[in-house]
Structures are given as C-alpha cells and as structure tokens.
Length: 157
Length: 157
DNA sequence: TATTGTTATACTCTATAACTATA
DNA sequence: TATAGTTATAGAGTATAACAATA
Image (cartoon, rainbow over all chains, first blue to last red; front, side):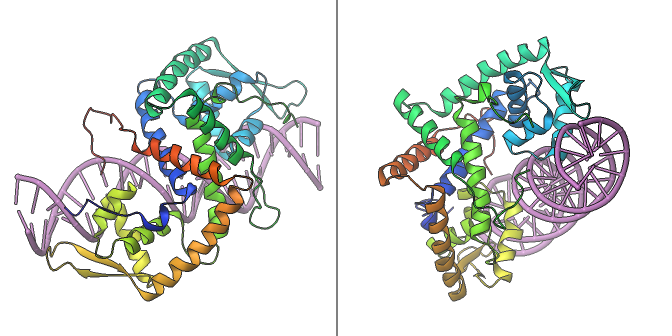
C-alpha cells in the first residue's frame, strides 16, 4: 500500500481540477440525500426551473441548463410519469408545450429542498456565511464567463 | 423565443448547482484548449499524477483521482500507446506495474501545462490573485469534507 | 485470504442527424 | 425556411462481478 504522500503535481493549482472534484463530491452526497425520492441532480434542476417559470417550454428549460433538446424529451417524460409536472399545448404556439408543476410536484419540491439544504450543510460544514457567499459569487462569475466556442461560433444547444 | 427573464428558482442559492455549471464550463473550454494534443481532462490528470510520483501503480493513481481499477486499464493503455508513459513490473510486488513518464510524456506535460494555464486565465478573467486563491481554498475545503457514504461504510474504490 | 491488474458487461450521459408538425 | 418536439443511435463515462497471478 503505497498510498501515503502522493503528490497531485501539476493539478495542484488548477481551479478546473478542484472544481471537478468538488462537484463530484457534491454529486455523490446529493444522490445519498435524495435516496427514495426518485429525483436526481438533473431532474431536480428541471423541476426547479419549471416551478419557477410556469408555462415555460422544454426547449427553454434545456437552454438554461445546458441540456440538448433531444435529451430533454426523456427527462420531461420522466417527470410527467411521476406526476410532478404536466404539459399542455401552448395555445400561442401549437408546436410547443407549456410546462407547469402539479400539486404533487410542489410537494416534491418542498421535500427535495429540505433534503438538499441538509446536504449543502453537510458539504459546507465549517463554512461561515461569508465563506458560502464568497463561494457562490466566485462560481457565478465563472458561469458568466463568455466561452470562445470551438469554431468561433458553435451551437450552445 | 421566451428566453428572457427566466428564473432558476430553488437552484439559485445552491453551491452544488453552481459547482456543476462552473465545472462543466471549465470542461468545455479545456477540450478546446487541448485540441490536437489527444489529451482529455482525465488523461491529463493521470499523466500529472504519474509525472509527480514516478513508480506509482495504477491502482493508486485511480484511488487519488476517484477512478475505479477496472476503468484505469483503458486510460493507462491509452497513455502507453501514445508513448507518454511506460510501465514495468514493480520488482517489490510483481502483481503491480511501476508507472513513469517518458521523455515524450514530459514534453506533453509542458505543452499541456502551458495550454491549461492559458485556459485557466480565460476562465478566471477578471479574477484577482486573491480571488483565485480564495476559490482554490474553498474548493479544497469541500474536497476534504468527509462523505458519509451510502451504507455507513461503502467502498470508495 | 487479500490485492493488482484484467475482461466483460450494463447502465447512464451526452451528442448528432433526420423526421413531423407547426410557424 | 426556421423552430419545438421527437426518435434513433453512437460514443463517452462509470459501475459491478468474476478471473489470473501474486502476495
């Protein structure tokens, strides 16, 4: 067992590496936190967007979350089969569906939100309110950073 | 196009959500930065660990990076086929291989490191040195957070 | 008996292309 | 002609189980 004193070398100062590891750690604990609810990180995200924007269509949800149209289909079907959202043809654009949370979806949101708050508390144990605020601010600045995109002009979904 | 004024609702205050998005943004730009080198985030990480710990075996590399033994095989094969690392039977434990970077692997590390530094500069444009240091510190604190793990005692590879 | 590396395999995620119905 | 949703499908990434060689 030569597993002591291992150096991570060039990875040490890389924000990208540490973001990846921290994000993966959150994902593992998120799964534990949601056990039994049938919700995953993605499906909770979709549900949250629909809850906050009643009448939104699935293309827009995907655009916000960085999920391709094609991959949204199964996610929306999953939430509908669970009875958490419903879908009705948008009268102003009959190609699109207007999505809304059901009463059951609202309950699921409340339960999930409570579980996730506990999960975040675990993952950020020892963080002061200032630390948490600083973390969110820094991450949001990264998210807002413009990405050059492969060919000067590629398709973000 | 109803893509203005969309709220992310319950996701807004969640560090886990923002970590995921920020990490994904880094991953996209990393791929662009490495175009033509044949290296991905994972393979660069493996190469870095080997470079920093000559003689290390692949199980240990996987343990550090959170990659399962079974999935390390293809990664190591890939780096060997590219001639970036080599593998010789560890004389003190003939089940294991001692991994080391080749001269070509050292060159690849130098090229990759330069590209990645430029990539990190892009992603953290506008960040002061203090901001960058704060980000790294916060992320490392998250990584060090003990994870309960599903059954009180599960296997982290 | 336990551990290193290996194979085989399944399951999830993500990406692309082509189709339909509406606009 | 363009857009919303859909289908099919291919490629990564990740997880489990079982085996050989060695400890």
